[in-house]
Length: 192
Image (tube, rainbow, N blue to C red; front, side):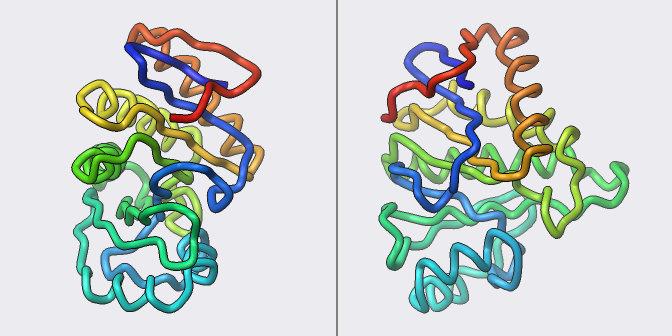
């Protein structure tokens, strides 16, 4: 499923993040850019040791922010490390921090002249953010960031867990109508 507006596209797909033909993939990172578990560990294994070296040199990255490294052995040009919040029940500014992390990921991509990026469900793994609540924050945040981007035209949420896919799909349907984006189910839009 995807939504489009003014030549920009947000997609929600059941696909492997590492296999995307995009300029950058987003890592759900911690502030120390340590790749201990979840998607961060998967990305680090695939990218090779240079990603760990670069990550250590760029740390720390505050929660709600994003940093960038090369992609090592991955086919993408870069890995953007977006630091989302740990879920603490909703009363610790989790939503604004999660929105900020997503907006920062798009901004970093835009600053580097990238046209496309692929994102996981930031904070929904070991950080425990409930996928339906995260999706309600993440999808509109990415849409807003794309509307202000000069270069980025495609943001693709790549989700392998069924509950994440359902939650982000529902959030895209809701946000598209609210923000004036044209929604289409089915086949993906062309890549940028």
